[in-house]
Amino acid sequence: MTLLLLLFPACMALVALAIPSNRLRPWVLPVTTAVHLALTLLALLRPAGNIATSWIALDPLGKLVLLLISVLYFITSFYLVGYLHYRHERSNRIVCACLLSGLSAMTLLTWAHHLGIMWVAIETTALSTAPLIYFNHTPRSIEAAWKYLLIGSVGIALALLGSFFLAYASLRSGLPPTLLLGELLREAPQLSKPWLHAAFVLMLVGYGTKMGLAPMHTWKPDAYGEAPGAIGALLAGGVTSCAFLCILRIYHICLAAGDGPYVAPMLLFMGLLSMAIAGIFMVGQQDYKRMLAYSSVEHMGILILGLGLGGAAALFGTLLHMINNGLTKGVLFLSAGNIHRSYNSAQTSVVHGALRRLPLSGGLFLTGFLAITGSPPFAPFISEFSIFNAAIDSGHWIASGLFLLFLLVIFIGMGATVLRIVQGSAPESTPQTPYRDSLFTTFSPIVFLGLALLLGLAIPSPLNHMLMDAVHYLEVQP
Image (cartoon, rainbow, N blue to C red; front, side):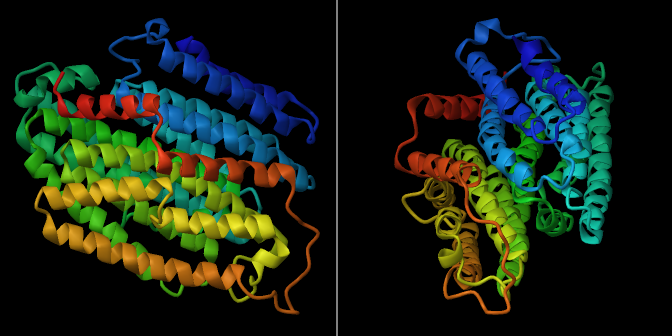
């Protein structure tokens, strides 16, 4: 079952390349993601049937990210069918193949217990995603794709160097050099401290670039701004969560080595810096797709801030927020994509009255804004409140104060842009396009919103157990 889960999306990518019909090809996406989700649930419910080696294993952290990615892809795949049918003038062969190869690489990353395999998987994800950013074939989209590749390549090179430093930390202590996660966790207290610290910094910066943490976030506004809405949802909820899992791996090793006090200040600083920069660029933002990019920078900062706080409560809130962010970004990016197609613009000077022209997508975009900014009863409120409570309980008064301040600034800045989009009437000069909401392009964001509301009202018991297992796994040295 494990090999089927890892290889099935890659095989279906080849099938997508072979299908000649531009109209039938998108249906490969929901078929593949439905099978992938079924296999994922089987892997979670029946772990005895999974392959478990020193190189490949599904631990509690991998389970959370795998479930998030599988659900995200499954729901988004139905939207993609409607979107690609609407864009029938453009071939979707490369898009479908890259989406499925990216799913295969992300799945491998969640199972990887060798840091080399993890690095190869995250790099494969980047290579699979770049052509998706270029889907519109405009000068700005090719610039965004190249910026994504170049900046990401620098980051991934630093992460590779950090992995080598980690192996050398074993060698310096008289141990056999290794990149196996299990061995590194067992040997963590004996690792050379200077080399371990250097490895952490390099991997934080490297994989933080893939997450879009400030100040390594400069690829994100262009990529999210030029990519189709569905691709933005998969980037903001899927690729960033995979990069966060990579940071969780090195964080776990540092905790096992007793270096929590060393890594915590850096994580707190990086988290607050990302929130601050997001807030600055969100105030007065005229491009609502770039606004969503800065919202992603903010929430990556919240994840890193939660790690820096440490402790069971903060880690629980952080892992829950990773899931909440992925689901809520699905609402925002998909509804924003619908609005963009209707107005043929992402500028707030052009886009007004979305609630009148697209009542469903406009309402989803407005509700998604309330959800992502932590308004109750939506799920991000629960996870952000958990992180804030953990900051108070641990005596991080300055961090908790800045956390609230940045959330307020972002709420005001983002709210001003969103209200300009949804309220009023479209100017007479606004171009009329044939696009209107359809079942396929509104079903997926509605499902995402329903899940975000459900997790805000009550966390299902199986998910709660998965979160608690992941927290325990991080806190206890194997």
